[in-house]
Image (cartoon, rainbow, N blue to C red; front, side, top):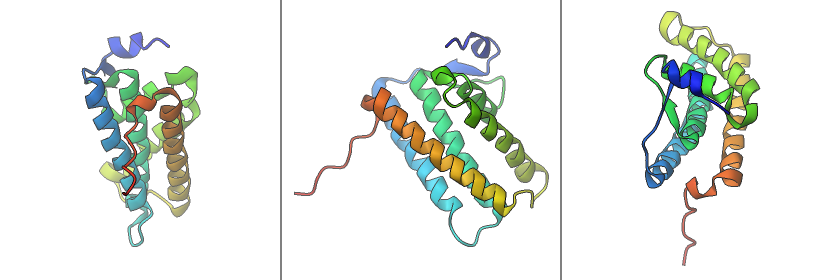
Amino acid sequence: MSYDDLLSRGVIRQHRFSHAEQRVRIEEMLALAERDLEYGEADGLPFDLHYICAYEAARTAGQIVMLVEGFRPGKAEGNHYAVFHFLQRVARGRWADEARFFDKAREKRNELQYVRPGVATEADVRELAAKSRAFLRDVRDWLRLNHPDLLPSPPPEPA
């Protein structure tokens, strides 16, 4: 799929990572997404923080897809905006519905983080966490099927 308009508007730009650097970065990003999901499910946090954590897991998973495809967010739009607008087009629109959902979550996240607290409800958190977890699982499956060389190596078996 062509990303020419996103490139020309500066929404995305090509990255210059080597294959080895991509692999390391993907491993780090997968760990970040898992951490954010875990934090989002921790007891004792306000709903707003649970929401932010679940949202960050989805954004990071989307950014992994961008990285694999050879891109990173540009400088013209916000990083988060770029990820979800790119995600609507990649893999023949495979994640277009998820991208639209997460882009709406981005707007709510902006409101609760920059405008006013108390915006996220328990139902919002449950829905976003479930969709973020499913999306991350799907991204891992996509990597396994299409780009297994970019997945982290499993830890060695104990002797």
